[in-house]
Image (cartoon, rainbow, N blue to C red):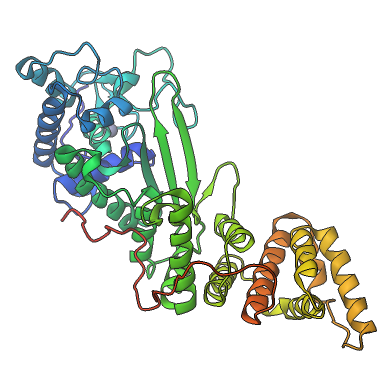
Length: 462
Ligand SMILES: [Zn+2]
């Protein structure tokens, strides 16, 4: 029996992260609101555009940046192979062949991605990560390749338009909110056109996939809370890799609070600048955006870790330390529901114990060494309580917070980190001589600035 193709949609959006991103790119290039609205005529138009772009870069003598992008994704395909023809008239039909419409066939196979009937089978040279990373794919039994329908073939090669690409890797986002995925892809389509025109050197180097994702999440934070997953990969012949990182569900709310609370916003700005200095990243936008993503190896709470690093190494001025502790509070409250007030007795005790000494630097250093360790901090709190009592002070009641603060595991660490931020900010505000002098003037006041999670978020492909 011959299957009719006309009942199928021209393009489906599937759960495969790469196909899904490619489908968004097709929709954006065709000026449609979503992949499901793409028509067969649209597919013709987008396919023609891909053929033009691919043929143009693949026949240039100097391997332009867009060709490097294609090479990173499809290293052994006809237009990217080292031994390819540089003659456009010869190459063009070979490229166009990739996207020919499916014809009715007596024994079609279901498309690997969307199940639409097709007789075309693709091998890994045309499908990034296939046959290399088992996390995403399984090989069809005893077959020469994976059946891929026309819509999905166009999508898999429109992928570099919708992904955040570098000369060697690509990153796509998946999110329960289609608007976030669309915005991410639209921003990248705009960027892809720039790369084609001017190469990567013509682009500002101050954003990354994380910053673009944060901007999209922020733009849609008023919708239902969603998290986002970033899939970064390289389809190298020798060492293909796939890395997955994600945000938490509360991310949208957190971004809104960082933006709307002046102290948290200032903390974010100052952390961004501090990271820019450290990482030589122009602007620090990319580095600070990364602090809100958790990678698969479990380096969680990068924001708290980045702040911790600043608190222990950077010179301290009262405005910055206060802005940073407030940024940390906002994060802890939104991400973990922490009630920071519960730290008040421990915070007062530690501060009082440190400043009771004529030269508090020694005790401060003792606290710095103990602050991150449950056992050492327990000892220090007991000693501090006893000393203050002997000196005629009030006993501190730590019974409410001690079990949490002194527990092992990530929760205890987060509470101890917050206590550390609170204590340092209090000491700096009280001008306690703890040996951390402010040297750099961060004074130009960013409180009035709006936050730009992605510095170029406005330049979205219309
Ligand atoms: Zn398909």
